Length: 401
Image (tube, rainbow, N blue to C red; front, side):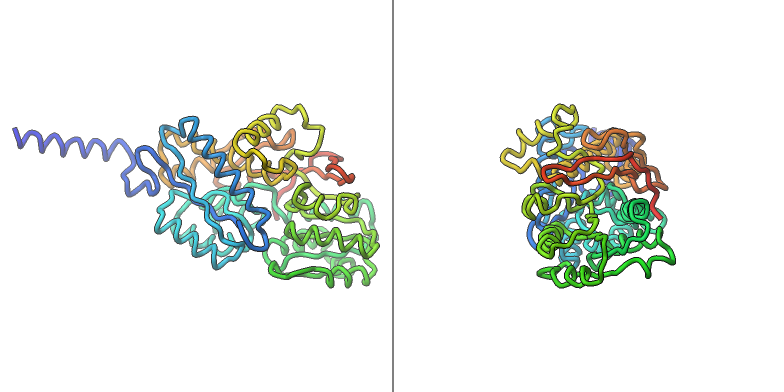
């Protein structure tokens, strides 16, 4: 009898091993839970973006309240990296090697993700839907385990430059950008369009993410006689730029990176009237725009915010973007059909086809494949009227360089 019991146990072990991924193949996954890791700047120079991590935490709390995914509750571990690349490395190593997360999701920032991208790919840990539009996140050959989400900054800069040439063919352009891969994508995108004309048409100034102000750079750019200004900066510096340009009584055609157009975090603190006429690019619906007052997708978002984030500033479009990230991630988890091995998670992240996300602009859909790691590839230009962002023109499809 004892021999029979042991043989039955052994047979059962074999059967289980052949019918489901082994525990060694599914780090961060138990029979009832899946661990997901994230780093966000809850403090430091980019702390404005900490709201993304807060929404994602609330979103997965909602998912758990509704029963989780395939019988698994989500343990979302979001750590503060202060927007400091060395700190990001430290926190990601903790998440992967100590907390044993299955994958990372929506880690924020270009310089911070640049510090961990090789590590994540060497470890073959899915590095999914990064909260940064750096063009290189589409490099599926060098970084097959990394995938972006939002439109490429380089493509965004190309769109702005083509519009500038259409409206002011003889423009003298001032470009102010953060001196890292985030800002350099705007430099490269403008150069893609201008080519040999770049040096003649563009005056360049840079700043460091840790700088206190950008006043001196803007004063110098105005003195150069430029009549167009493109600012690729974080929210704090973008708000400073709006105020300083106003104080200088400078009236350039003004473009600002889409990552820094939040009404609550940038435009109002800068002085709403000071930014009238600024142009940017949009890919999600603006929560302050009455166009979307009765939009089903935005009503879904508002209902979520009211229930799970009461008191949060619903004019801050960072909450809208984070909801888009989270809905996309949830779809991937659902497509896994209970197989949360890293290989299958990555396979499903590479297998999104015409996915409709309620907060994306009409006509925009999520598409991915093993050779397409830029899920959102289109934008529409918009202009600040002192109260809201007003869309104009057509949705512009782009392709990263």
